[in-house]
Every structure is written in C-alpha cells, then in structure tokens.
Length: 133
Image (tube, rainbow, N blue to C red):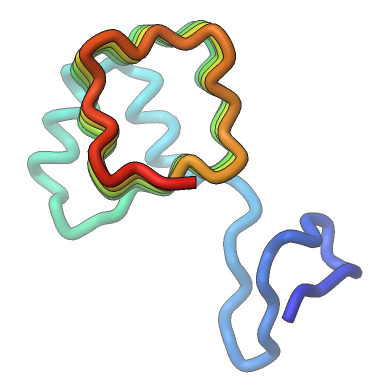
C-alpha cells in the first residue's frame, strides 16, 4: 500500500513497520565525501553495514574504484561523477541520476536500475550481467 499523504508517495507505508528513511545516512555521506580511500577502508571494516546514500548529492564526485556493493543508492545524484571501476554489485540504483557519468569497467551486476537515467553515461567494458529495471 502506498501512502499518498507522505512527502514521497512512492515510499511504501505500513502502520506496523518502521518508516523508511527519507534521506541519506549523514555518517555514510560524510565518509564517502572524504574520498574513496577512506570510504573503501570503512566498508572493509564495517561489512555488516549496508550503506545508505538515499538521495545523496554526489554530483561530479571522483569515486573511481569505490565499493558500493549492496548499497542503497536510490535517487542518488551522480551527474558527471567518475565511477570508473566502481563495484555496484547488488546495489539499488532506482531513479538514480547517472547522466554523463563514467562507468567504464564498473561492476553493475545484479543492479536494480529501475527509472535510472543513464543518458550520456560511458558504459564501455562495464559488467551489466543480471542488471534489471
């Protein structure tokens, strides 16, 4: 059931469930904005945490070789970001803005791309096996 009174009507709502977050986890966003080296180190040390970058603004960010495996990147804004060789395996990229990104040699296997905008994205040698929309 969808709650049309909520700020984001596409968010599922159930009275017996905890509400879904409406923005990125501030800690996760702060870490990724400090650079790929720190982000990947944090990911290696916190493998039990599923990163939440829902609706994060990472426009033009250099995220080459970043580990976004299994992350929540719904509605993330990555316009013109450098995502070469990044690992997005199993990531949720619903409605993500990936326009003009460089995703060359990125691993996008098993990624949910429903509604994602990939206009102008460089997908040369990207792995899109089992990606769906």
